[in-house]
Amino acid sequence: MAEKILMKGNEAFCEAAMRGGARFYFGYPITPQSEIPEYMAAHMDEIGGCFVQAESELGAVNMGIGAAAAGGNVMLSSSSPGIALMQEGMSGLCVCHLPILLVSVSRGGPGIGDIRPSQADYRQATRGGGNGDYHLITFAPTTMQEAVDLIYEGVALADEYRNPVCILCDAMMGQMMEAVELPEHKEPVMGDAAIRAYKPWALTGQGDRAEKNRIHAMPWSPEELQESNLEQKVYYDKAEKNLVRYETRDLEDAEVVFVSYGTPARITTEAMEMLKAEGINTGMIRPISVWPYPYAAFDEIGPKTKVIISVELSLGQMMEDVKLGANGRWPVKLISRTGGVLFSSQDIVDETKEILKGVK
Amino acid sequence: MKTVFEYTKGMEESVSTSYCPGCTHGIAHRLIMEVLEEKGVLKDTIGIAPVGCSIAAPRFMKVDMIEAFHGRAPAVASGVRRVHPDKYIFTYQGDGDLTSIGGNEILHAAERGEKFSTFFINNAIYGMTGGQMAPTTLIGQKATTAPMGRYVEKHGMPLKMSEIIAQCECAVFVERVALDTPAHVRQAKKAVQKAFEVQEKRLGFAFVEFLSTCPSNWGVPPAKAPDWLAENMIPYYPLGNFRCPEEVK
Ligand SMILES: Cc1ncc(C[n+]2csc(CCOP(=O)(O)OP(=O)(O)O)c2C)c(N)n1
Ligand code: SF4
Image (cartoon, rainbow over all chains, first blue to last red; front, side, top):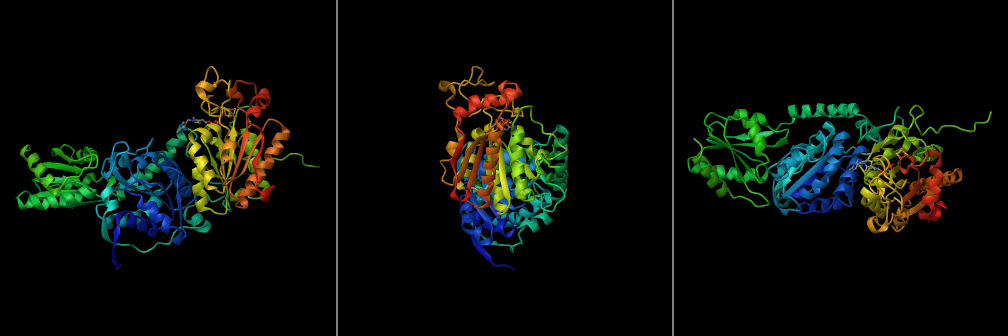
């Protein structure tokens, strides 16, 4: 087993992507993820890859489209207003059926926002922030190790699903240091021969192929566009079947079930211990994939549960999915902060007790 | 028997273009493809089409191609270049695409000295969307969003893109040509040749501006479009070379 090393989140994300085979990174500075372009500028060359500081996030995502269309494995990253600018490209990648790994390190919003942790970009990531019929495959890790493993796997998943894969982190995860075990370097797909063999659809110049390759951002007719969308839906159906991931804890005896992801899930875990000491049994559903969302996890909830509480750093964006999962079987409540403000485990304990007073 | 005319192998023979009668997009397509064919590099070329009438170019040009989002072709080409250091790469962009929504992308591709060639089709109007004003629309020229014609106090002066790009140190080849007469078309072909030579020799960014026709949105009969171009566009957009490295002179 590899050694554990202490790393800052943003830098560990870079290592994970490079080890997973990403060789092309295009970025623009924005806190709390500027360490990502800085780390890539220092290290991409060493492994035969390429870093470009783009003129804007629009430039970055479109460079990403070019490199992905050409058959390269691309990583992009940004934070909230920058991710907003990238939405044209996310929609573009999906209509073109192109893979890309996106790390979104969220800060408070709306607008230019605050540089502290937030989960207010949940809808942007899970509902498709750009135009058209598409999804991003989105994972929301809670620990650094989980983030590293998902980013590493995400490079290959994007290729397999011909779609962007988004790793949704909050600012806390980008900035904090934690011990991680880094995976082995994968052989990257580089050079004409490898790209042609592995990605026969990529633009490499026609070479000895019988036909030219064309990648259409604008299919020619409604029928062609429908066909293109339905082609992508095959991948979405497969994702809903194979990529739903979540963790549950103590659901059988839980009076209260928390649903929480990312950094708030860690704070909630602490609150669960504190509540237990006071004789209140709680359980937790922790979504790891947020699209596709683990609605099935709610079927595992036991008979003693009186209420479900979505614990998140937004005005209840994920709560909409929690309600779909609960499907009217339990009342759904919210514990939340917004704008970059955090709650403590004591806050969660206090607010849970308050909520319990109101449910039978 | 002597062959006096042949289609270029760079264009699809069985697909006719979707351009209006009298439109010179087709001539520009043909020149670029002819030069690539003569170089024998059609199969080593990757093209990036814009949003505009020529979004259809990948259906007509016989090379690997992608359609970029509106104005972003230079960013897309920059990405393609990183993956394929040894291919021929070009962007083909209209004036709305390149000077307006894509002003930032083209400027920074030029600034970085990207090793690809940009072919810029300036027809002084938004073609595909039906004749709205572009940054290149001339003073006095009518457009659906400038129904009284463009005038300085309200709309400012038309952008001279070649002159702007020529200010970038790493844009080593910049030339403005026109597609109104056979003599100008022959000159235009030479500029295309040089633009690819600059790329081949990795000298820097190459930019060719074609003054082109849009009879449909100028409200001019197709046969009169070349004259309209010569009388109205060339006086404001002077033809000629703005920058050329020694190596390709
Ligand atoms: C983001 C976005 N904005 C606007 C449009 C609509 N649109 C399509 S083509 C076009 C103008 C293209 O004009 P130009 O670049 O001059 O090319 P031409 O059609 O004249 O060749 C516009 C505004 C679009 N497709 N995407
Ligand atoms: S609208 Fe104008 S630019 Fe477009 S094809 Fe017709 S003439 Fe050409």
